Length: 496
Image (cartoon, rainbow, N blue to C red; front, side):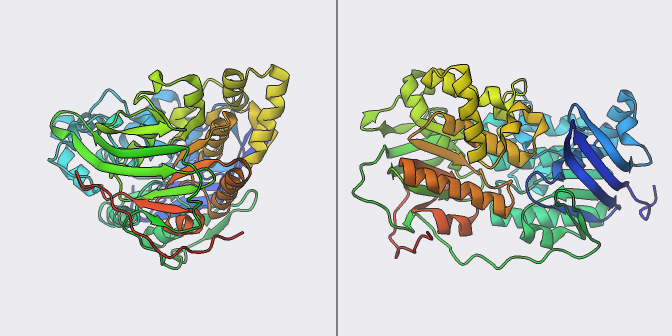
């Protein structure tokens, strides 16, 4: 194929699931050596477009208009064997929840080598360094359960690059990454396109990332796609807030009795030679009605802290109390009521939602488990929960595969809220959402904090968002064995 010939072309492509439109009149051309960004609000069809390019539309979805060719083929009508061959040798797709696509029984080095055309000679170390992961420090010997969400995302990207694809499709490749890593990934993609003439299509809500790497932008709106033929998007103004430790940024009700207290908590990740400490001597008090923001570079222990609070990661030392009662380190040894009171919303909702269950069944389960609600009352409460997170009662009949990444994230939040918890642990719940939807989620959390005294912990790399909504900002730096310190700062006003 000539480097001037299109690698893929969608012309007025429309896709629907039953009577629900998933994508409307999208026109896109992918050319070798160019990076094309697909932007737009959650639910506009960004993931659907990438999945169509990969020949992997959700079950039941169908093309209702337009055409699509990929490397000279009508990819949506290819026989299964030809489609598998095309994906293995020419296409690479990294989804929005890459961790759910990594075999948990395989170590990183095998995961990467598995997709290479020359497995025994795959330059695993070079690929790890290319995606800004350390080589030669034991990470290649870890399984995915011992990686942070950001590290899993980069392993999935290295795995895709090992295939040496002609077309690279990336769904929110910087979700859950800090600003420095985001810029590194942008530069890597730009270099890959220029050096290896790869045609790259990516979805993103991050205009700064798009500005750094994209040659062209397709802005999707439900029913109204808008193409920007060349040139990157306008980057946002740089964030002004920079913090280095636990900082009060709002009016924290110090007199309130903490619902959860953490004392001298130590945690390690990994196994064998690759085992390392991510934080030590951590103290934290979660008070009703407050939002605690946690930030820091990828791999510093943010997700580990949330999992320790939820009883899913056993700490090395320290104690956690709930309502003054000592919590068992393991989730299984906690009472049902203790489990209900602390709910975790994970970073990758696709891997946490049962694909065989509808959204309605998923939300009804905690209602039956914790409150013994009859079926008729469950249906009404499910509708309330879906409406509260910005979805419609009609989403109750869908399966996770029929939802966009942002919609799955909101279902995951609704499931946690169904248990009526005292503490909500949110791991990058806004990273895959557009700005308006993210702000809507934050306003939902603000209402729950105000009306019900919910204590929220939010892991995020979005410092402007945290500076507006957080009462306390905790920065983990990943330095082994170094206790966190607390600094006071003049509180900033919290918008009404």
